[in-house]
Length: 404
Image (tube, rainbow, N blue to C red; front, top):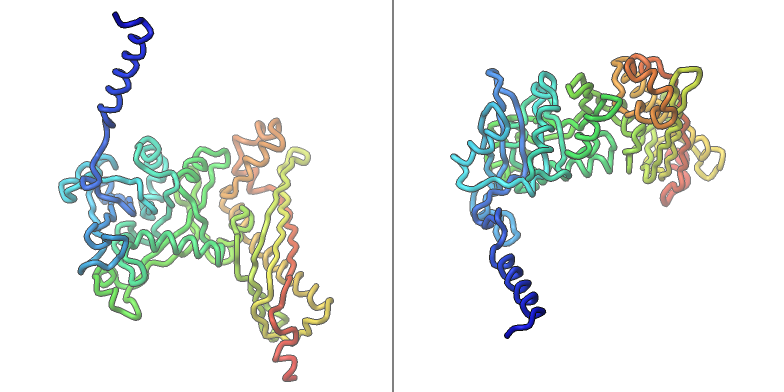
């Protein structure tokens, strides 16, 4: 007779064996999957979604090396449907594999769709659908369709979606104008109290048809390319306008999104210009309510080194170095002021000041939240900037000064 304790152990082993032998209920073989590297969403004239999928051609990127064989390393398929899920299912009639979004790097939304319908329906689906990565970057196709952006090939990167990711990353690090916003960021901002949101823009430059040909990989000067440009401004989930240049970077300064930047300034009227490479920055908000009116104080600190100067200034003089600090600080303050004032003119709190006021004074926020757009437009703000130029390179005395 088998002891009772042995019966228990036998039962446990039988159950464990059943679990191990059953496998994963939703397991799919790698060869049955199509990796979607980039996805674009537009709207047709008959009010259908037009969804584009940039899919890797496995034979062209085999062994971890791009350029295997001939032809493009990706294929872009498009389908239309009443819902996004419908297009995902319909595209399997063209692509002989099941789509998987576990490697999707970029989601691009057409400008017309963003302005007319907005983002809320799209992101309601994306958050529900189990296969999307929350770290996928979100961009707006400036002046065109997402489909066109995704179909442009690149001479520097065989998979265009990866190139777009790299452009956004390098642009934010070097210039600071276009922010890296992912699916998780957008979903949180859409449900925020301020109702405002800003996303990076990307546009097609040049000839669409030539950019879709693999011959672009043989050109020293491409006929077409994609370019990061502008900051898309949203209110209540819909596109309301664009910021470019100084205003776009002003938003980045406010939101503490400037990691590195090149900052230019004039020396004096008709006396040349100078540039500094900003290497470290930090922006701190001080929100408060004064006599029922919101106020934000922005304290910005930046450190960097002098990179270029065409001014007759003796850099060995401490007073001149102090003047440089103040001159670059004035440039940052000007960019920030332009951005905040422009947003106030549009009654659009793209910065998230509403959340800051709520945290600082919840009672006051309850009174002003219903009319926050108007309160934001009339809000007082103050900008304090300190810049510290720590280095001047190998030369203290500019050649222009030595020449004189």
